[in-house]
Length: 84
Image: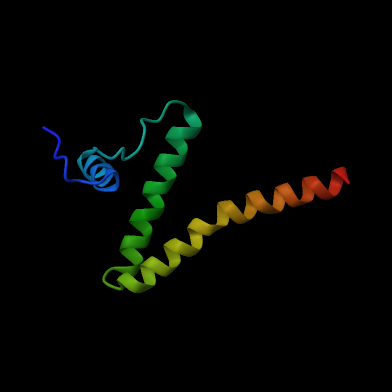
């Protein structure tokens, strides 16, 4: 039963809250399995190295997470320069 006193934004928030999040997809090929295994290995290393220093661990993980984007942007930039 839909509550008529809710605004459309409130209904959307309720639907979003009730939706089940997708955590990740199953690995399909070799590259997916390799990436998942490598990520798990890096996580174990980070957990072991930083133990209880959660702030340091978060900073390192955020720094590492930025690398693929920077590499992609650099490759795109170089491709554009080459095509000029």
